[in-house]
Amino acid sequence: MTLAPRDKRAISEVRMEKAVEFLSDARAAHREGRHRTSVNRAYYAALNAARALLILEGASPETHEGAITLLSLRFVKTGLLPVDLVREFKTLLSRRTDVDYGDFDTIGPREALQSVKSAGKIVSMIDKVRKRMLADLK
Image (cartoon, rainbow, N blue to C red; front, side, top):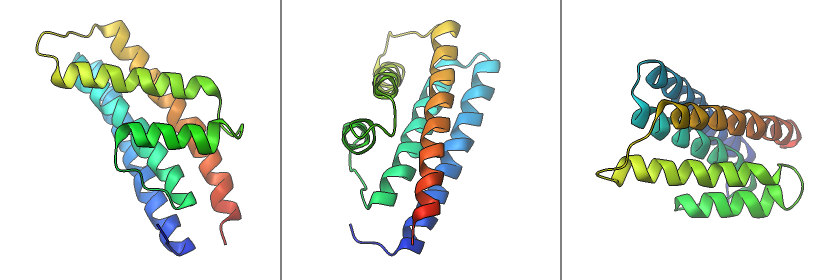
């Protein structure tokens, strides 16, 4: 994907705004005892943060797994993000899939809170790298 730097910046900002909003939604849902919703929103917070970072490299993955794979290849393998971030991201995806599609799957408050905390960590780490990249974006 070929985008002008200002377009990459604009898309990245919108995606990060969504990530922050979804993380806030995840926290609120958890406080309200809506654990499935909190896991869903936590995952989408992390996904939007990843997409906000990837667009700065001109990458716009079409699948959830593609986003995780590109994040790993471009930012974890290069040492910009820690390896455990991808593990946590995959756990979030697995939980989100379970709560969204599993008819009999349940999620307890502890797992939901863990998901919200993981998403917060992922969004924060990604945003730090993203801000450094934005500063260097010409």
